[in-house]
Length: 315
Ligand code: NAD
Ligand code: ZN
Ligand code: ZN
Image (tube, rainbow, N blue to C red):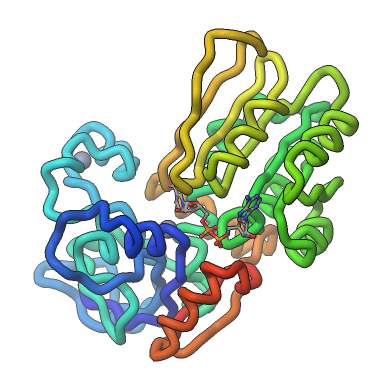
C-alpha cells in the first residue's frame, strides 16, 4: 500500500535512536507516527480505495504468530528476526511525501478525523492508552494516578485517564506551562518535579499513607524512576513507559505487593479504540505543525522541551 503522508509525529524515541543508535540496520527515513491517505492499493488488495484517510499502525510484526494474530504486533514473537520494527524503525517511515506500508492490516480508517492532526493517535495516544488499559484494575474511583512527563505521550495520558476512569490524576513535569495545560485537561493536581524531594513530599501530602496507586512514568530517567519507587503505595503499580535510560533497582523490600509494568506501544485493535475515542471527542492531540523541511530544528526544540503537545511534520 502506498500512503500519501498527511502528518508524521515527532516522537522522543527518535532522539533516543539518533543518540544511541540501538537499531543496527541500514539507513532509513524516520517517522513512526503517521497518518495520511491511500495513494495506491497494492496487488490483490480489496476493501479499500484510493483517497481513504488512514492511520498507520506502527509496530509491524510477522502477522502470523500468536501475538500478531491477536492484533498485538507490538508483542510479535519474531521481532528479533524481522528486518525492521516498523516504518521509521528500520523501514522507511513517514517523514516523506509518501511511505510504503507492507499490508492493509496495518491501516486503520480515520473516518472524519483529519490525517494531519490524527497522526499522534498512532503512538502518542496509543502507547499511553495501552499502558492505562493494563492499569485499569488499579484505577478505582478512590485511586490516585501520577503521570510524570506531560509531553507528546503524557498530555494524551491525562486526557485518556479522564476519559476512561474516575481516578484522581496528579500531573508532574518540570515545565510549568505543561503543568497548567494538564490541569486544563482534567488533572486534579499539578506538581513540579524539578526538586524531586519537594515533589515527593507534596505527592505524599496529597495521597497520604496509602501512597500512589499507579505511577505512569513517561520520561524514564533516573530521577523520575526513583520518584516512582518512592511514591508508589502498597499493592500499587509503576508503569514505566519512558525510555530515558534509567534503571529500576528492585530491592526485595517494601512497599509490599507492588508491581512494575513495562508497556510497549499497543495493539491494532487498541488503535481502533483510540481512534473511536478521538472521533467521539473525548481526546484530542494538541499539535504544533511544522513543514517537513524544518525537521532538524523540531528535534532540537523537542530536546529542549520547547514543544507543546506533539510536533507533527507536514510534507
Ligand atoms: P516528549 O519530549 O514529548 O515529552 C517529555 C516530557 O517530559 C516533557 O514535557 C518534559 O518537560 C518532561 N520531562 C523531561 N525531564 C523530566 C523530568 N526529569 N521530570 C519530569 N518531567 C520531565 O517525549 P515523548 O515523545 O512523550 O516520549 C516520552 C518517553 O516515552 C520517551 O522516553 C520515549 O522514548 C518513550 N516512548 C516509549 C514508548 C513505549 O512504547 N514504551 C512509546 C513511545 C515513546
Ligand atoms: Zn514513538
Ligand atoms: Zn508476529
